Length: 95
Image 1: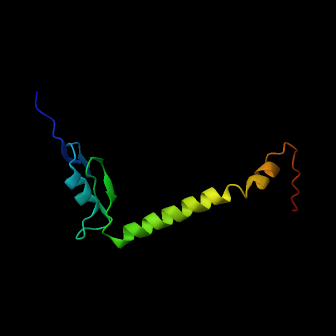
Image 2: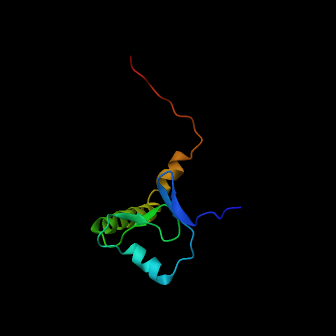
Image 3: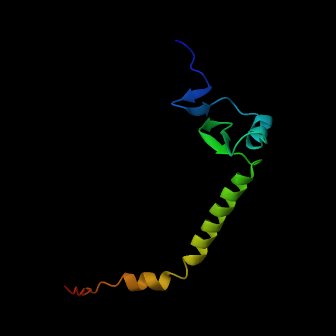
């Protein structure tokens, strides 16, 4: 039986299942000459290139949204209690 390749592309999506070395891990996340997305050092797909300023923008926006979600959840608890009431609501429609 033929050996299956440990790295390559499947339907245009890269994969790599070779045992990663520390040098390969670090160099894959910092590639100044490449775009925002680079091939993952292990696994399937792409990852962020930390040498590109757009990657840091994506990380900042994701962090801000996570912070907003976690800090806003305690403020909306009063609204959630109002929405959970089991009383019927009457809706009037004028024609």
